[in-house]
Length: 97
Image (cartoon, rainbow, N blue to C red; front, side, top):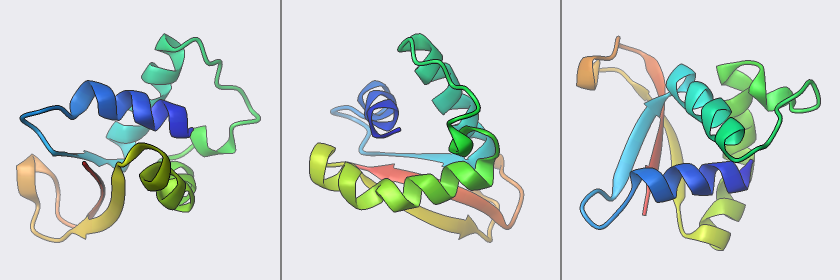
């Protein structure tokens, strides 16, 4: 999981952009696609790949490891305003350099 998130960060974050945000369903789709691109077969043993909520829980558990290993800070918050065309009260994952 940490390697998949690192790959996503390397693709999304660069010299210009220092943070990216995903709703949980968007991030789950991105994780599945990136895993497939990396040749990682997501099967039943990856319980975090089944629902956006399980992905969020796994990601928050790995947040310190990802920050210490790769330098990417992961935060979860609830968008109560509905920014960027999202509905209000959507859970959002923010990844920062």
